[in-house]
Image (cartoon, rainbow over all chains, first blue to last red; front, side):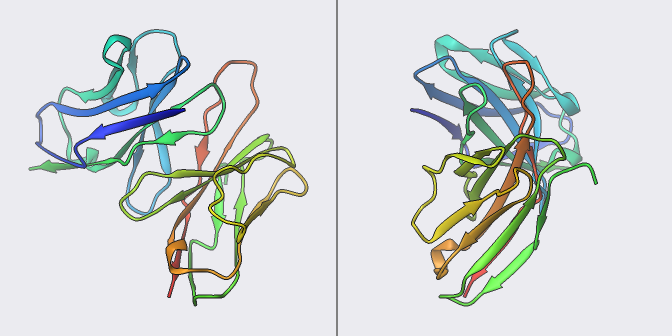
Length: 112
Length: 116
């Protein structure tokens, strides 16, 4: 069985500040880990993925995440928040090409 | 369009009605997934097809839910005798079978179902 836990259903940061969205996973096999972003009334868009290559993964829009096996974490960061980053973010886990198991999401608000 | 499309985008049904939700995957994509996203929650897996074969339907919440993909392309998710708890956004995703270990799932915009 596999699962993810996202700490903080709502996160607010000031424009230009560091963005940190937390995700911890549980998996009985080496996991594939993902971050997706969802804008209102739109589908999910893949931000970045970890598939057992480099532990520091860079994605689109300046986001990156680090896979830490010892902490079972895959936190998402961005050095400087932009107003356009306001959205819902989902962490997900899967095993190879099977179904995705999502967390409950974190709504990111950017304060001007 | 090159992406995954879903129709209708919005559906309002009276409790007890049957509904059918359509998904058009990206052309040539072998795998197709359905997910259910309740308000304020993350998407939850419903079912998975590889071509026309339904390989996993473990996430379907009851026997009122039925999915098909008869020709290995378009898929339909049918909900019979809808209940209020079926109100959610239904997301479809497709992926290709590549030679690598990872095949990205591309998501459609979803169908928002409201059961009154």
